[in-house]
Image 1 (tube, rainbow, N blue to C red):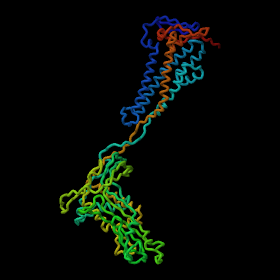
Image 2 (image 1 turned 45 degrees about the vertical axis):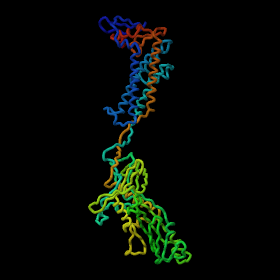
Image 3 (image 1 turned 120 degrees about the vertical axis):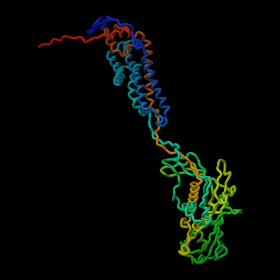
Image 4 (image 1 turned 90 degrees about the horizontal axis):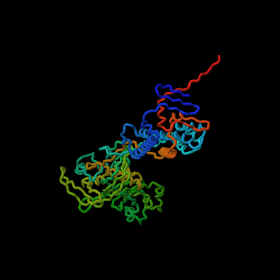
Length: 583
């Protein structure tokens, strides 16, 4: 017997024998919450809230996917926000699903009898995953099992949600004034060349310095400015120099003349190691003179190309040839053999002819990393004969500053120019003993005038081509870094963080969300079909006011939720039993 301990008119007696509760006091009007608790509206609103949270999460992820983390300006981090939203979706989902399970324990006993323990098992399932797992193994499966599955799978949603967002480090390139620059030029003029040509001393002249620098390939770094890793996403056209080299041994030997004979190709004369004077001319007109000796010979000579007006022939500045011959081999040991021809010895020589000229370069895929400036793609644009000469004014050194112009260089290409004084000074330097010379192992120190011959090693086509390409590159850098330099503004790298979304990890939370909605829908449909069954849901009072008669029928005196609410304020205590003790 549970007796009422309250005062006043409210009293209730619950007789365990017949299970009928007497309500002696009736409350006033039923509250709003009671009315809606007797329907599924609270659960429907809760489930809609859960779906809204999940939909908001999907929108949030889609909107910020692959964007910089700096774009997220909320005071809570992006990961924390995702965790909050998915936790809210899970909590509201479980609130609705647990109510479905609570009502399922009543619906199970609606049509046929079951063990009372099943009511306890289903009620425990509504409280957590362990009870739901027990329900799946101990209760025959039905639509309520779907709610139990949702409760169990909801354990994994937080873990999966943590894997959805991945913050990935990356790099972006942005324009920062002056932080990523290199030079290019569409013209060149060096006032120091005028002073040198007129006899003034100027040791700091850039032109010979650039040539000498080019004799040591990879001996310098192109000027650029980059504070970190940089890139230039546009192509740039610059004025520069280019070189081409070919092996002309056969053509040069065909022109060889020696004082020992008149026709080299028909001579039966022999190389005796003494005094024969030889001369020849390369296909481009470079003259090579030498006296055959018993030691190695290196000759470097050049010739300019002039037009009828006395000006240099535009893009073709000059030709140079390198001759290398070393008779110190097996044939040399048999020179006294009359069968050894002079020609067979000379065919072991090397004659490489090179041309240096003016050209345009189109640079693209330009970058700088770890202080290394790299031009990924270089397209050489050939310049034909110059368009014309622009006559300049007479300067303070009584020299006229003329310019060689190239107009109409191509579609989208700039007009370019070079000061004629610079061209003449450059060619004069290549003609000078500073560049041209002869190395003869038997010449002695008095007549030793090697020029730049020592830089060309054994005179192979690869070696000579590499050096002349280096000279052309050095001269091009001189033009790019001259007074007519323009700055190419690039982008500087910055370390950033990207928001990456791994959608596969969101599959399980979405599936759980869908199953939860289906579970609620099934519970609502089942409740509408069983209109005689009140929506007791998880009410403890409803269980308290039910009893089982001798026929195994669950009975209650409460007809609906509104009537059950009337007894909520009743105070009660457990019945005291007198227990006699024997001494």
